[in-house]
Image (cartoon, rainbow, N blue to C red; front, side, top):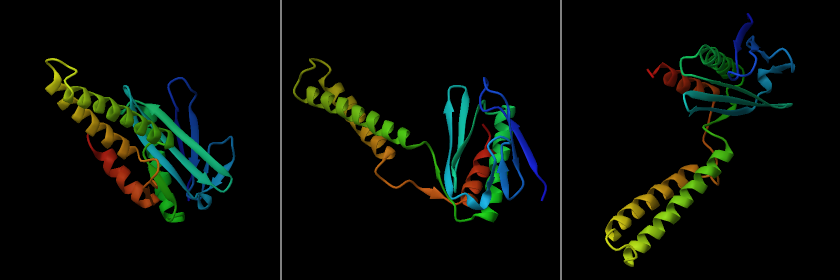
Length: 188
């Protein structure tokens, strides 16, 4: 099997990295090779951050974990090269390690953040409903009740979607690859 090289910049202010993938091993040329059969799973996230997208693939393997990330615009050269590597890697993992489990979305810190923001919105909304119900706002009591109810509902929904107490949904490399390819083919 031939070795494919992928070169991209993790962010605009960092030097380019080159990762090599040959179907059995993944290497960045500095920290040694990772045998694909030793990868147990990990996580993948691809989230907007201003005009850029921050993509992060974490691979959990026998010796620890490795984080491979890229921050670039949607059509940027580094992002295209990074996504090509992720797709190729997931394809190889689907053949070598089809039982690996990958979480998608943000990490645990993000879920706790969603719960905290959701709780704050629900609390503020609850105060607005109570204040409107007891007539603390002269002319805006009815408006405060509506906005407070909306804020509380949205806060509860946001907190529930964070759900750090629930086991995260996982995907096999093949399932993640299918989802990612469908997602990447959509026009932006």
